[in-house]
Image 1 (cartoon, rainbow, N blue to C red):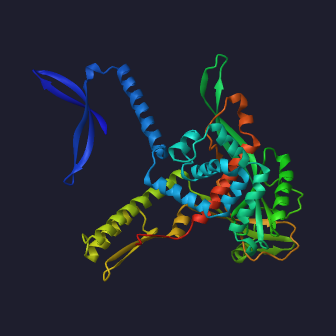
Image 2 (image 1 turned 135 degrees about the vertical axis):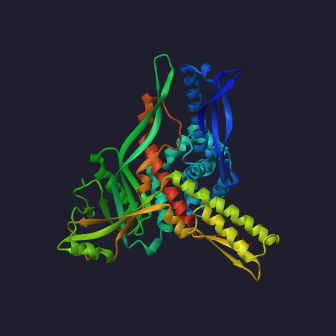
Image 3 (image 1 turned 90 degrees about the vertical axis):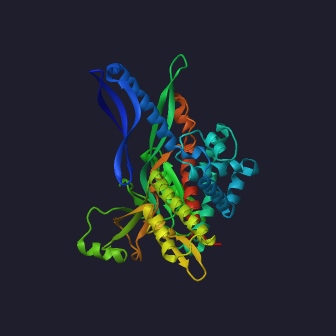
Length: 463
């Protein structure tokens, strides 16, 4: 759409009008039509145009906000997601562990925090409001705050660690090499500034840098964590984490020190290799390489796409599923019978949503049965990017590793407040206490645990 000045003549006098024009296509041709009239240019002063711009900007912000907050109205897709997440929790050791920690009375709070984190993490509304809109446990902001605090307590870490070792492979993996990934992370929240008269100013951004220690099993799946506010506290937090791990598993661990600051520790410490000789670089593709007392190996890191990109991908899949379900229904009702017509329609649905490598379909002309399938492995790869780097341990007396290492820790690099109940600026550090930040780390652990368990092949369109 665009504005245009249009000049007309009436009774020998020339008039200039301003109109809002829109292009549209009809019968293969581009045409134009008037959307709105703004009257004579003589009546449009600079001040009136400023008011118009301000009004348009306000309307733009309202529409943009609505687009960013799809979770406030329950769609069929979100309802289905909530059902699947609850089902996964109920069928896993996680439910029993949460009952032990929260008790029957408060279990619903923990479940609501988890479901909200998986299905509506990006909605910028207070947690109690979002959970109520999603049909989850109704509670006060203080009750949700205390539930998050309980998730961040030390006792919780030990109880939930046991459920993850079971999910990650139990006794099959405990004798293999795991990883403790040390890196800098950021926790972001909000607060409010208040003046002497009690007037509330605009929200203030809260940003806290932390040192995250994420323990992963031999497959790179996160199983436990600690964090430190200051570097001087990292060694002590590392020892706390190692002690808890050794109480639960006999696996060996290597520390991947991304900060390049860790020195003496009871565990072997790996640093990013500044230089890798050519002959070693080529050999790393097959496994680790020992060069004197030094051990070179590769670490594969998977980065998750942004929430917005994933939502966009999910929307495309939803449109494809809806289109293919319609085709399936038409086949069952006898409205579509010709194979060429069915395949043409299905191909158009898939290609128009750029899902050629994600969705396949089959049609049996003899039985007149139409089915479609979502390739979960390809979908998983679409949702993440892969990075491979070389690392080195300076003193490694043991034989080399038979394989490279994998870490899935990128989701812990940027943590965002999931409670959305910002405090007065004066109390912001008290509000975002160590237990609350740990609670958010624990919530990401649980989120990863559930999503990994749900990552099973899905077949659509079956009767």
